[in-house]
Every structure is written in structure tokens, then in C-alpha cells.
Image 1 (cartoon, rainbow, N blue to C red):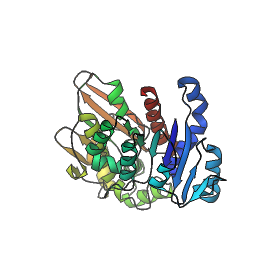
Image 2: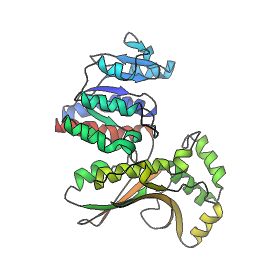
Image 3: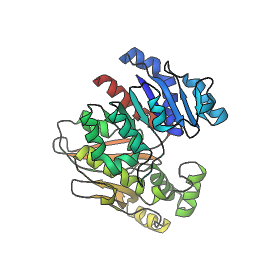
Image 4: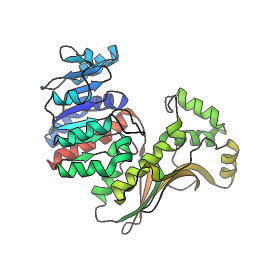
Length: 336
């Protein structure tokens, strides 16, 4: 399987590491040989129809910060659709940074690949939260697969789980914790009695929270994920504008202590139903499935046949997110 990889930040490099670690295993088990034939970052591209040396690619990025410095096959300033036109590939792997304003450049890259009848795998929430219906329609029209397990919950298996493991169940609603940064902050505030401001600074120092944490702490990241879950699992047609959102920046250590005294925790909970979407801080019981700690994500799927089914997994991390991407690549291989 020839892969054109757009984006070589933490997630893209995680994918490269996973290919280096698991390619022999995938070949033995599935007959799947993953080849990165093109990789881009902001500096340019590296292209080889025979497949790039993944370890050399990672070493080059670590030493120079630039994909285009890859020996012999690096090309400065060649990016995006121009790279896609220069290489023969089977799957576009799109892992550029999320843009929730207009979803670019990811949206245009995905559309081009689908129109070129290439399969697509992405971890990018922007195109899915804003243009899900359009993109899925385009994939169907061109008879190609469009996968996005890594866009929700990192390593937590939920989208493929709902489609492949519960295909006979009608999923009525989903309730869960979909943002690892806010869960870390609330968990640490509960355990240490620290203030929101102090705990946020600690999360930033540990690299768990971004320098600008707004999308996480104000609930926007989780809101994007509720849209993706609603449209992909419940079959709705929501966009980001349909989500009622409240973040955690106003939560105090006193409120958390008061809740804990009564046997409750405060968590940022996403609710997905066919009629409404919301993200807000809520009280949950200390012994409930929602009492997950640290950067864990979880989601409970309410079904007609299996009642409630809960999945849990690490919501962030380079290799963890890459594991979800790998599951999509394997599933595409199995179905082609």
C-alpha cells in the first residue's frame, strides 16, 4: 500500500514510527506492506516511488526539522496538491493541523484525493466537523473509502467499534469524555485541590495542554468530536454550529471539593443524540464509568440490544493516535 502523507508533525512522525515498528508484523499477518512514497511538511516534500526509508526520514526530521532535507529525494517548497500530482499512491494520509474556521488545507487535499479515486485516512477534525456530508458523498460517488478513526479519542476505539462490532445494534445516544487535556486538568484539580490556573500551567509545562489551550478548555475540541460521532454513528447532519458548548475555565477548586464531598466528580461531558449535541461540565458519580483519570477518554454508547457499552482509551499521544490510523489502513486493505 503506497501512502502519501500530508503533515509530519507529532502525528505524522508517529505514523512513521509505527510503520517502522509494525511493517514486518503487518506483512506476515495481512500481506500488507506499507510504503511512504511521499511525505510533506511546511518545508517541502520527500518523494520516492520505491518508498522512503522511514528511519532515515525520522532522523532527517529530527536533525534538520525539514522533510525536504531527506537525502536525494527531498524537494524544497513542494507541498500539498502539487506533491499529490507527482506521485502514484493508493491512500492519502492527511494529518495536517486542525483548522475549524474553513478546514483548509485539509479539506482541499481530501477532496482532490477522493476525486482522483484515492482512499483517504485522516485524523483531522476540521473537515469532518464542518463538511462531513459533502466529503462522505464524494467518497461514495468515487467508490473509495474515507476513514477517520483517529479524529475522535486518539487510541480509544469508537467509530470503527460502532460500525464493525455493533452493526446489528441501533445506537441511540453517546455520552462521554472526549478531551484528554480537560480531563487531566479536572483530575489533577480533584486530586490536589489546586486552582484551575495553576493546573493549566502545569499541563502546559508537561506538554499536555497547548500554549494556546482555548480549543480544549473552552470545549471546542470536544464539540468537533460530538459532531463527528453524531454524523458518522447516528446518521445525523449536524455541523459545529449546532453544538451547545461550555468549557471548564470557570470551574473552581471549591466547586470540585464540594462535589467530591458528596461523592461526585466534575467532568467535561459530551452528549450526542439524534436531536441535540452538547459539551459542558457535569457531575458524575465517583464509581461510574465516567470517573476516568488523567488524559483518558471514554464513551458510553446506548444501544437498543446491548444496552450500554463503554469504551476507554488514551485520548492523545503520537503513537496512540497512530494506532488508530493504522487500524484504518488495515481495514482499507482488507476491503480492497
